[in-house]
Image 1 (spheres, rainbow, N blue to C red):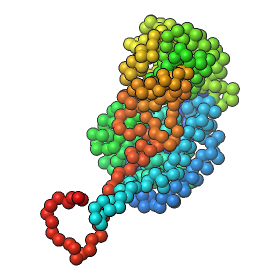
Image 2 (tube, rainbow, N blue to C red):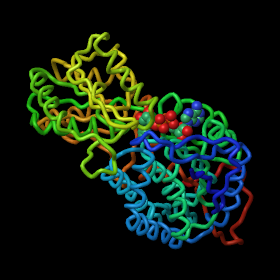
Image 3 (cartoon, rainbow, N blue to C red):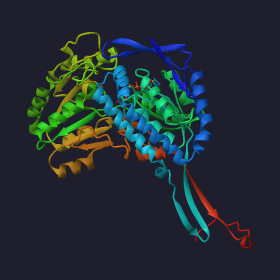
Image 4 (cartoon, rainbow, N blue to C red):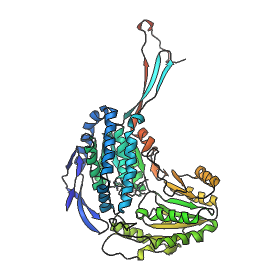
Length: 494
Ligand code: NAD
């Protein structure tokens, strides 16, 4: 069994005093051991990032951009290899893994445009002989802490922009599927990134806290569950750092009576059960408005039996296993407890049996779900879709706006006026109109509201340039020495 090590200053290292298991979720077998970093190892990574910072921030923009052009090429070339790593440790099917990588490549393409992104502004003659210009400078060493569900895309959300902006990074990926981060770090190295600019440390709370408490780390990007996001936000900001901490979700998809029912059912099934529901933008609540409910529930149910669940390496599989045995059992417990809470179990995926010891569970559909039930209030993060029946558009909006999560939402309708009103009314960070998973392209930024994001910057895209840079404004005058005089008044430009 191989040991997955840290990547510090361009080399794989580990004292491996503590380790954790890495499973293949499709077989249930442990396939690797991952080293858990000690405080000392995290400090080594931060020291390597600090030492690399002056050289990297002084590197010319064209040369920096060149790394991202090369990295894009390498990612495309080795997409299959990387997808296989994702599938073997995360469990998602190979086509889904390839999709994740291609979304991550968008962030690399955005970063390759850094020469444009880092332009400042210039105002000539703000007063007689006085000019002003602004600069965007790196914040310094950035900590990046990522979840298990997108082991390539989410690290790229952070490290591409952070590095493009001239920062150096210590990445702490999920300990459940850590190999992809090492693969990425080596590709960056192959693309010409100097050693120490991107370091990877594995581990748990010990490693994360060492990042949050280090005075040499100036900004922290986090993506994960809401309780951890909140605690990361509080601890890092108490330590004077800039923080963005993206949390969990409960994404509602509203189906209006005028929607194309078959199209809406296709979208709901795809968005609820794709990647076994382990996407922060997965649809977990279907809001059926008015008379559409019975037909919609039947249209969704009728599609579920045909879904092929199996090992992600099998090209026929549409959905793979969950990440761990414990998580699979937790997801199943929501379904088995649903009828006692008053929900109607239309399809119980927990009774489906699978060969072997993989962490599989079937797909479930719950009807007549209401706020106050655990299946509605909690983020389940599995292949469980709950239907909430409401009478009107207003009731649908009130339901969504009362939810503590506000990552993504969607409306399915053929009425442009209703769609526009939804866009205006809804208190959620990312909205789809007849699009169930509205993850913005790399040229925009990604982020939820309320308990789905702590901090004030969304991730990747233009807001990431703001997050990973400090602005500086320079006021310049080249006076004629003969005109110089003492003046104790406050400088006025009038
Ligand atoms: P998680 O919160 O358990 O872990 C995320 C990271 O935090 C991991 O690197 C983990 O090692 C670390 N961590 C875990 N416990 C910690 C602790 N007590 N102290 C410090 N660090 C700790 O999340 P997960 O299970 O890996 O990922 C799934 C969650 O992430 C879901 O809630 C999902 O909605 C969310 N997510 C959100 C987004 C988004 O953009 N909002 C994107 C992807 C995933």
